[in-house]
Amino acid sequence: MKRYIPPQIPRLALAFAIVISLFLVLRHLLIPDTFGKYGPYRAASMDDYSTIEIHYAGQQACFECHQDIEDLKALDVHSGIHCETCHGPGQKHSTSAEAADILKPTGREFCGNCHMMNAARQKDAVLQVDLTKHNIGKNCTECHNPHQPWEMKK
Amino acid sequence: MEPQYQNLYDILANSQGYIFPNEIDLQWGILIVVYPFITGLVAGAFILASLERVFKVKILKPTYQIALLTALSFLLVATMPLISHLSQPQRAYEIMITPHSSSAMAIFGFVYLWYLAVVLLLEIWFDYRHSMVVWSNEKKGVMKWVYKILTLGVSDISPQALKWDRKLGYIITVVGIPSAFILHGYVGFIFGSIKANPWWSTPLMPIIFLFSAMVSGISLVLLVYMIISYFRKKTIDLNVLDAIGKYLFFVLILDFTLEALDQIHRIYVAEESFEIIKLLVSGKLYLTLFISQGLVGTLIPLITLAFLQFYKHKIKVRKTMYFIVGILVLIGVYSMRWNVVIGGQLFSKSFSGFTSFKLGLIGLDGTLMAAFWLILPIGILTFLLWLLPPWKMVDEEE
Image (cartoon, rainbow over all chains, first blue to last red; front, side):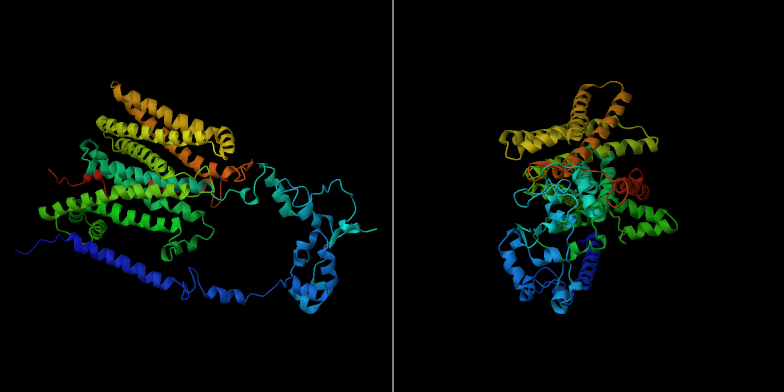
């Protein structure tokens, strides 16, 4: 006698096989070619990034021309802050050497970005100044040299 | 002041004490509250269904198919709150095609699929196959073909084939119970494994989530059963309510005990995070934890259910009480999800400050969106009950 095979089982097996194969085909089509070459990401994304225009030059490029500022900065509390933190991206200026290609911020509010009163910032890490009381009406750079903040201007 | 700084200072005004900069805004909003709530309803409803099937609780038979269809309706929507919470929802499929084994969320996708395809759909299919074959012969026009497609073309309804339906359905249910435990335990695991957050990081989390899931799923099936009976103008079988109520009572006791154990343990060990958590539960979470979850969602239902165990008079009063208990328990479990998800993000991981949560109405992460994902499964359930009415099934066993 032939062994009874319930008809549900082969039919369900077929349905599952179709769904799983469909998933595998879709997966094959959807995964980018270079995925997994170096790790769980698309390796070609690194080539994409390498084509993006560079905006920041890094402070060594600044010091090639501005040796004096390097020496000045090294002596005071801003020594750890890179030039482009305040002056903005400098790649264009480092090749053109035009003054128009770099920022030279002077206003009270610009310094206030780091130095205004802020409860969420540790006081001993960054000095906080109450801009509503401290020498109102004057620009910070009138007294402080931003490259050497504690050497007061006369 | 520049607008972006003005904005930052406005937000900072809503925080208290010292918080880290990335804690100002809550990353997980109401949709992440809805997600474990819906998943819990699925697991709970399924576990109630399996009581009838595996443990042969015959009295629950009228709720068996209702529980399965309820579980399916909510499971189909379970991932939607997560997907709509993403900033790039169109990339959600990537978690399935390139899963990373170190990502708990990626593996959840497969736990979910296993549960949907291998457990729920198969169990419902085996259960309804006989009826669907009969319906496909009775109906005319489009519906005939709909049922034919649903049977996958297997029209064999010989006693031998039906015996196999029951046998395979039983095996699936047995596999389904641990699967349901894994499905919802996993949701708890995702929270419990975040070791930087003392409000979440406890190995008890998956178990607590699981039991609250069972509590909510059982309540939902109780409510759905009562509402369906009302619309079909059938008398609600009080024995069924009593049986569901009894299970709800026992599971609720376990759930309450586990959550109490978690809190007592937290209070007794009083780790360095304890001070901030004490402030959290007595302040920002007071209403949702003590009133909504504890009193309304746990204690009142517990006392009422205990009372209903020996109060056997006035049928109408008892039915009303069961209905109210069902709603209260759902409110309680929803509050529990809220307290976990939102509560865990309200205090700073520096343990020295709080941020606040402002619930939006519109937008991808707003209340309306969450309400939509909660209402949609009810629509799906209505459709499924119309397509596969349990009360018109062909009775085969006797």
